[in-house]
Length: 151
Image 1: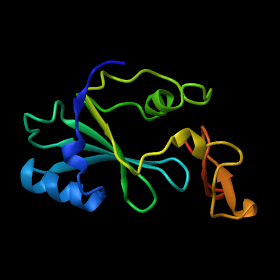
Image 2: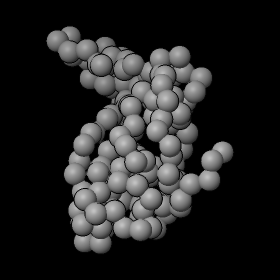
Image 3: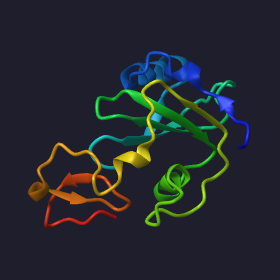
Image 4: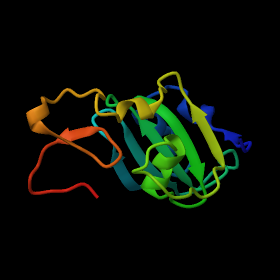
């Protein structure tokens, strides 16, 4: 595995609100570029730091949270990663994900982290009754909406 910078200092309080406040006050703010949900229990928020500090090795942060906005993982890049390449990196055996990530510059996992691949199987967790849900690309569930399809 490639050695990356430790970003644990950014996730000290384990909550998304605390991280965003810290980025505003100590790192010049941020711009939300993407918000990707994979099922009911995983969110990726892609942020661009306005003025990255020297301890943050790149301008792009991917903040992974659980359904309660608890930070699970932080990944840092010099450019926005492709959503499906990010999931291929996490779950390389899932044939519905593919692509290559830009170089990973920094990473940390918190005590909230768990293997996200376990959320994606046909028996993955859901709070939705089967008749009210649909499977997403790669796995995980969302509300069934016959007028929309997941990209």
